[in-house]
Structure formats: structure tokens, C-alpha cells
Image (tube, rainbow, N blue to C red):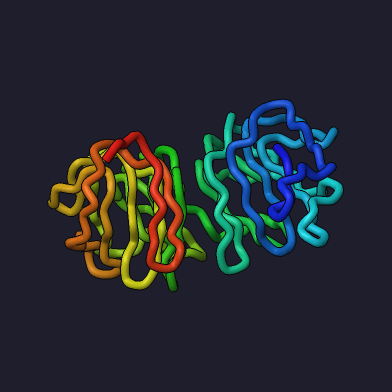
Length: 239
């Protein structure tokens, strides 16, 4: 875990030295959030989650934020609209029962108690667009409804929204949302009753109809980043 000057490439003095691997990073409200498998970081006991203030984009002394999830790993951190959405292998967090997904106030670090989607299996990614929080993973139920690997949730409560049910036939690892599309990547071959190999674009509304956009990678997709009209993609694919 390190901080690097983007202009010079020089490594900054900040050296939190977690005892086990970090797996997720996010910046929100002038705070750097770190998730992973660690028990200690920056010389302090912090189970799986920690945060650092940012001063002129340089991390400072570790904050008191210590929600201490009971599981083995944080899978994703996603900041949006003043919240920090967290997923991982946990059953409780911040002393409250929350299975595999939770949300915090990004400024205060307080658990948002009203957000409780309670997925039955892991969540890999979040993407917020408008009043919908899109969620991907390996779950079969989430937000009180049957939803296979993909769902649209109320971003404040975690309740599954009606109708949006693209239902891929394999796990989804990557999400991005922009305009009127949700882009999804994973290990599927079919989504929305349409053949799509590992990568698809879905309508943000209705049942999540599959768009004609079809890059057809020859293997699974595990991550991407959407910037303006370009989607950067990574996966186990050669074409």
C-alpha cells in the first residue's frame, strides 16, 4: 500500500504497512478508505477497514474509524452521493448485523442503519445512477427479492426495485453506469435471454433490456472503468 506522486512518480513518505493484503480503495469526503484482509494498519488495530484524512491529497494519521467487520475480507468500496458502500465476507459490521453489504456516511464514518440489502452471497461491485444503486455479485436474493447476480436497489434502504431483472447465467464482477446504460462484465454467456459473452450493456429502466452493443470478448471480464464515451476493460480475454 503506497501513495505515488502522479507528476513525478516518486513514492510519498506515507507507509501504513498493513499486516495483510489490502483489496479495495476509495476516496470520499477528503478521506481515503482502505479495505482488505488486514488486522493492523499504520500501527493500529483495524479489522479489514480503515481510513486516513487527506491533506493536499496526502494521507495523514489514521482516523478513529473502526467498524471492525467480522469477516475475512472486504471486496469493494464505492463512494457515491455522500455515502460509502462496502461489500465483503462479513455478517456484522460496526456492531450491527449486516450480511455482506453495508453503507456508511462518508463524512462522519457512521453506519447508515437504514441500508440493509442482506444478499445471500457475495457482492462484487456497485454503480449508482440517478436514484438507482446497481449491484453485481454471486447472490440469488438481495433486497428482499429473488435477483440472480444483478439487481437495482433503492440507494437509501437497499430494497430491490421492481422489474429490473436481466438475470445473467453467470457471476457478474464489474459494473459501470452512464447515460441510459448499465455496463456489466463477468463470467456469463447469456443475459436477458440474449447471448452475450462476458460483457453487455443494459437499459437502466424497464426489465434491463439488452442493448445491441456487443463487443464479444472471448473470455470473462473482471473489471472496467467508464470515462466519457470509452469503457476500459480487463479480463481473461485475447480478443
